[in-house]
Image (tube, rainbow, N blue to C red):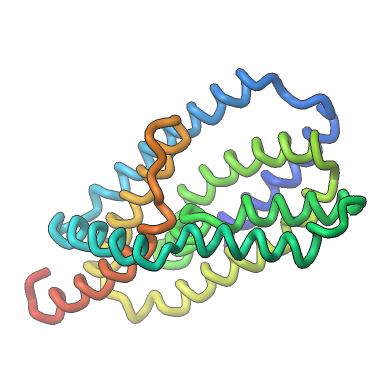
Length: 232
């Protein structure tokens, strides 16, 4: 839960700075900060990817997960869910700046591969590298949102805590059922997704990382099958 706690703290600090900097930060400063974070996120992903004991599991999982996720259209589904939620709860209330700020921030902080993979890492390994990196990104985002939408961004810490904390607790509960070999392949596959997020932050051709989320499930299944067969 430490990673989620730090994430919440980063959002709170970002909101405070956003209120102090109502005119916002220069765009060039935001861009260079995000690029620097992108480099750091890529490094974290590489470190995670090196955990694999069988690169074929990772490659098979990432390709299969990407194909399945693209056919399902996971990113589009998440975007539509966000749009519908916004329309139902805040979209029709143009005067409700708090509602707009809350919904916008919640969607940005919760909908994404980094929140899921980071929370899984916290629960399965007790490490928080991904959520720490996400905290920096969310902190900067909170500054920008607060400077334009107001203090309602602060309310987003509640769903962030419940969402990421819930995934972490569930992963921690399931951890005893996973052997080290299975966790290693899930970690390595998640690392590739994190590299994709880092490349997106750096401004390269956009990678639909959200559509690749099923890869982690494929990695778990393949690793479990090969472990039971005695290959890993």
